[in-house]
Image 1 (cartoon, rainbow, N blue to C red):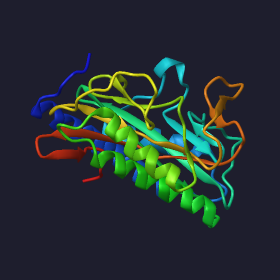
Image 2 (cartoon, rainbow, N blue to C red):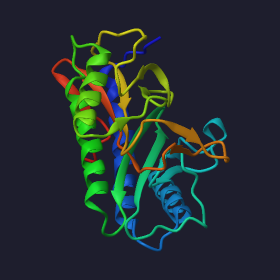
Image 3 (tube, rainbow, N blue to C red):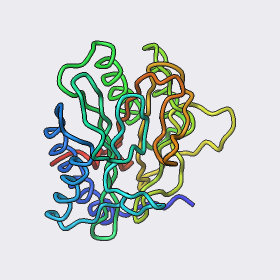
Length: 251
């Protein structure tokens, strides 16, 4: 069941998502050669405490950390580690969420570590742009797959592929609510008319090579099957009468 949110509830979601954006902005400035992914997780934890908010990924389904940190060929759900040291030329995806005043916020960014190749920079730019292509379609009267189609067409026109096995989602009092928000148009699936009060997290995961992925032995981290790089961007948005509003944009 899709849960439509009231204006007051969306106001609360704007607060928690602004906190998420604030933490990601802080983390982005900490990404540099020599830092470990564990360090980034500790920064995220400390900043969450400062804000008085709870990291929503910590313990979710057994996930052991507050922050998902995925490097290069890692697509999503990378577990922070003291042994994983970022190097010049890496790209790193930071996926983070908070729970505050009864509601969840969720967002993700991919950034380069020092100087990166033109190919990796294009992958980051295309993934970020595809998110905004999808958000543009998140308006009353459109259907869910209009979002999916906009993302897929743009990404594939740039020579990259869209991950099929992981999708965006509804969000509100729970981190994952209905509907699922695919980043491609599935052959089967129930298309949904978009309505005022829907709150969804749109999160394209884009691979430089094939869209095929597989899980690592830790049971969490997902990597590209061909070990080519991947990038990930995400915003939580609300669908209002006059169009989509990005809630996870820093105030």
